[in-house]
Length: 335
Image 1 (cartoon, rainbow, N blue to C red):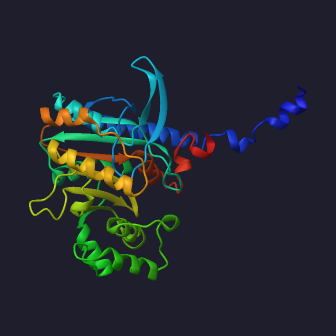
Image 2: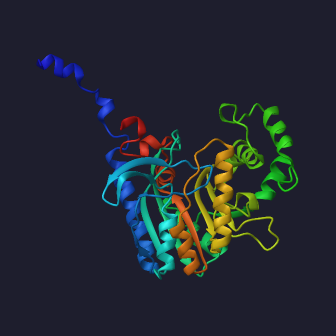
């Protein structure tokens, strides 16, 4: 091959370079060091868990990436799911007596790419035995303020129902899916590619368009008390209408999701089955239930609260970066 041919086959200067420059890389390293210092001072143990597992979360809203493995243990081959969160394995550590733990790792979600999304992203997840969701919100706020370099940033808490009532005049507990759809269509907001959405899907769409952009404009805003139908892995309130779940927003960007964790194995098994029913209804493949997690729950997971924070988005807000490509060494389009 001639020198000229080699030159023609080279990538352009822009194509091979990382999205995040050296200043951003240094800022990421500094932010991670600060987070680790926070947890070390608080006596929270850093752990590692597998990112490729034979099971995954069943949440219909999250689609795992799948790798095919063949070799010892699975000589005929088996699908390994790249985890959407390290949650299940970390809860098994809690059941084994780990005490408070945290993890900084990669997580993977299929079909998610855009200004605020990349299919491979960095996540901070931690669990505090003895905490409920309200106590954990205090630590989440402390840690996010630290990472953003704004220790005096104001914090507010708004319930999910109150946001819909004040922002859209809707009662989230007594509004039909049809009415939610009509409101969305009136404002030319449609489901992705014409997808038929259930009631929670329409609520999520309306939240994203009408409410979320204004959340945390001048500080941190925790949205609390999600409807029970959106509990995910959180326990329910005494009346069964809401879940002990929160999300954190700053400048309209979702940064964290947290629960007062469900620790009842029977309720968890029922939710797994309900999730897979929804997956089948949406023509998504069901995911094999994580029996090891259920076994850990039967053994006993301590009463605890847990949260996950998207570190790439946190870095974006820390540095004023508008697109996640500028916060990552190599985003999807650069791989």
